Image 1 (cartoon, one colour):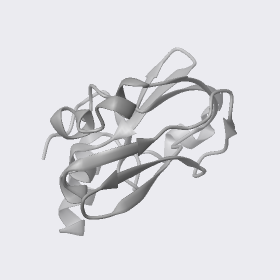
Image 2 (cartoon, helix red, strand yellow; image 1 turned 180 degrees about the horizontal axis):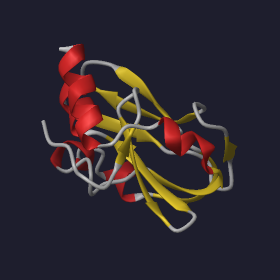
Image 3 (cartoon, rainbow, N blue to C red; image 1 turned 30 degrees about the vertical axis):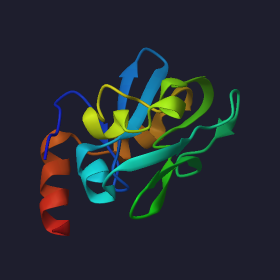
Length: 127
């Protein structure tokens, strides 16, 4: 399982990379491995305002469909359209292929996210 330093992680297996007031959000390597071959990604609507924990999108695999949750509150300012034509990009490199970018409207939930070592320990406890 690949976990990158410098990112924050949620208990629902999303990662977040904060750059200024923007948050890049994707699914973790653990999540893509658990799902198997990803065949469809439902992206969020542009300008949608989300609270932390709201459904950001959906990732479907040959095994199951799984909601993707917003790890922080924010407004969707960008979506990764390339995932529509190539959803398997999430399998090849889940940390390079983010799902959406949120303009953070409330960063208090950042404190509730895990760093890389905390996330690795969390995943070890789930296996």
